Length: 275
Image (cartoon, rainbow, N blue to C red; front, top):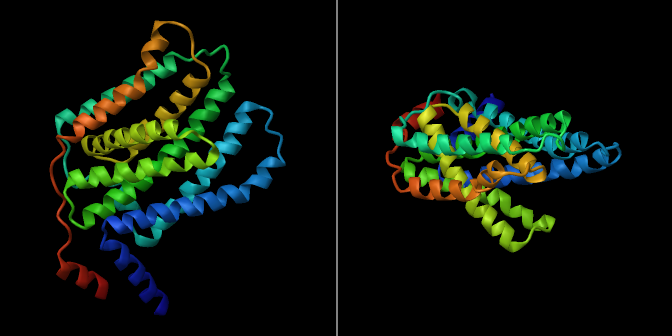
């Protein structure tokens, strides 16, 4: 009985939603993921990662895969897993497809602009698999948990979009600690905020979280592979403009976001809490 009351209190706490609970879940995840990464460090260091593909899978893919497990476990404890992957409670609009088309188009261009004589099949596979873990973790966290928390508090969708994108961008500020310059990090934060808006729109217009997860995962793998192995030619020059185009797209489309998902009535919440 005590365990049931504790679980009920835990779920009741998160069901209230709100921006600060969104911040709490993001910070909590980030800290746990960093601890997992640190714990894996000696293990990965003891393995021969001279093969680039193996290095990507172990150094990049494995820690974030364990981060995915952390997020799924959290969702299970509050009973949201089915809810997060269910049909969106607010419909998208036709213009939102612009965000999907732009991001997918540049994913295709990036993949087409890779010099596959330098990037082996094993390396491509390693980046795709690892990046899908990243797409799952970051979209599940920000377009899944954060969006759900914000909507439960009754915020307008413009606020939901901005907070989810801002917290998504903030996750990348930690790159300063790895030696990335302030200028490069600032540009990355701007890009990830705009990309986050595009992924929020992808969530809305496709109606399911799985699509921003897949778009995000292919974006990361295409970008990393293209950056490290660009093929010469006009196609690569066009693909290289992707970040700027995504920034412009996300910031412009943000202006047109409307709507609200009504928060649960207090009476309903109380009834659920006493059940």
